[in-house]
Length: 187
Image 1 (cartoon, rainbow, N blue to C red):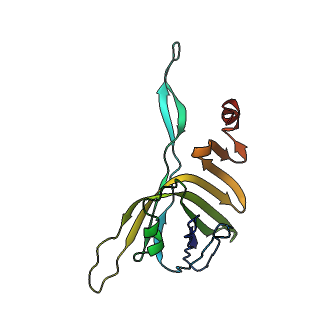
Image 2 (cartoon, rainbow, N blue to C red):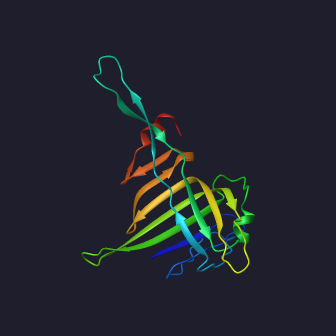
Image 3 (tube, one colour):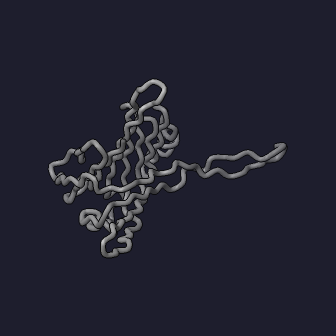
């Protein structure tokens, strides 16, 4: 089971939900305007988490090792059953975090029946909007690619990964892996 909220953190905010559960959780601001689009999101491909690793072989080393040069840019793709005006209004947004999306999934284990709640919150802006092909008597698809400036993965209420490249934050399993670097840079 999967649900999604799409919230625009500005005066023109909308929330989208799909799946068997309806979620409405826009950011808590006085300007929030919520709208429900239950059943309109056909699919989503959540961001891949990748690191840029480069070979390094210094003097005296027997072989090269991969050194971490930081994270790669993140993006996600999602598709709707048809055009969505609120998404189109956010095209070419000048705010690097002008779009906020929240995806919530419930995964049930076959061996125990236990259910895990997994939530992903992202912020960014739309890189590509594909209106798709329209044919008489056939459904269409409205595809969106969103470039990310923020990513947070929560498992059963516990934050596992939080990446905020703009602010130099990378928290994994409760450990802020960039705290010493931010401190050294007075960031």
